[in-house]
Length: 115
Image 1 (tube, rainbow, N blue to C red):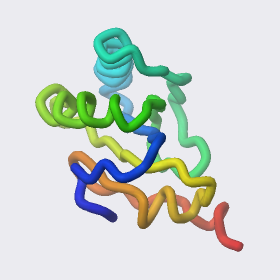
Image 2: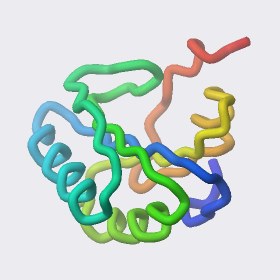
Image 3: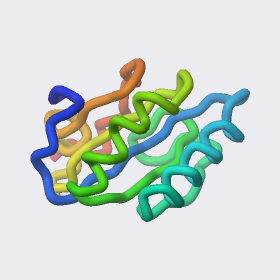
Image 4: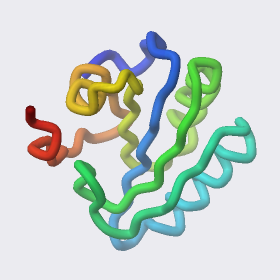
């Protein structure tokens, strides 16, 4: 994974992960980020979806949003883990070499991206 503060892509996703005890916390964090930074908040998935091994909420933003959102996440995630990745059109690379994290790294289900 790349260092977490490298803003080198045009567009990004952030996936805020949560467990059985923290969906309300994650939802509130995502909604607050959406309102504060005028970024797109996706659906909250209360189960594993795609390569993500936990419930998650996806945020979509551009490089300008990255510079504001990532430092804010550092201060406000309160123990939630966040995967941040660039969007290049290569899903496997986006979730591995183009990704960074805030908090603990989660083992992604990458088999779905194998060529």
